[in-house]
Length: 391
Image (cartoon, rainbow, N blue to C red; front, top):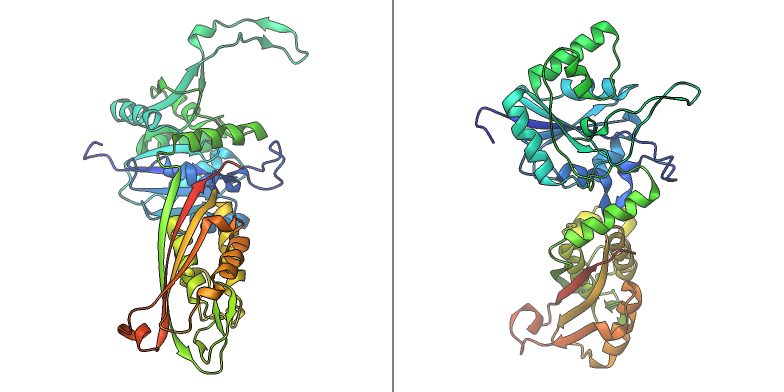
């Protein structure tokens, strides 16, 4: 990237999803475990200093949630306008003062290859405006309002254009101001720049640069994303500790274990399940149990940790993961846990929807060393394997 150029992206997040049969904004649809808009934003990693997401005002919270935890570059939001052109103009107004160049992209193009972005960037640095395009493979006819053919253009000189379109910011701002003054409504940002007389270069696009429109497009996009993933599985670890307390039940892996003391905690204090939940969440990079089930929330007071574990597994499914296997180690001097381990394995397996033979639960002591050995509490460790799925 040129040291003089500071690139940002304006990403359009409108889309009713009607043709896809969704009944809601298609860029919020799940795709390979993440919302479409998150994939679209990720395309610009390494290319931009930040991005502006233009979305309907009523859906702002849903977009913020879809991008929760995104940290690769800052994101701002702008309210969408009545037309695509107006929405882009709104996004341009939200760019920071240091912006010199901008990509304008459709959020529904969520698997754009880095080569496409690099080509339009480099061309725009040269001439101020560039767009990706692909040759037409079908014959094109110009017709009148009654459907009668008027002419057959030479398709060798025609291109189907895509996004992102790349511009020096002053070039695009000038074009938008001129269009607004003249009451001109273009089909894309390049058409606004063209009418000012500024040249626009067409670079090589790709037929795989899908714009999600039909239900089949989601399936094809997911196949491409999952096939391109270098790691089809993820591994996470978890660790938790709870002190003993009087007047509470001792619950471990969802099983009520007879003992004179229970474990202290906001929920049922199932230390083993807590460690397992952290392992699962960690494998998917989704935070920890403190983020999802804070002890400041009264909804979780006394709740069964097995219920929370089921919630975690539902979240994993939403993000495209299935549990491969889990291994839990409980560290306690007392009580003896061996008689209860078979039921623990079955209980956990049922909660995470796997076979019991993929769940291991082990118990050990510390030879009376440490807080576990002194009988002050119990700790637990867990390891979990997640597998990407396409279902």
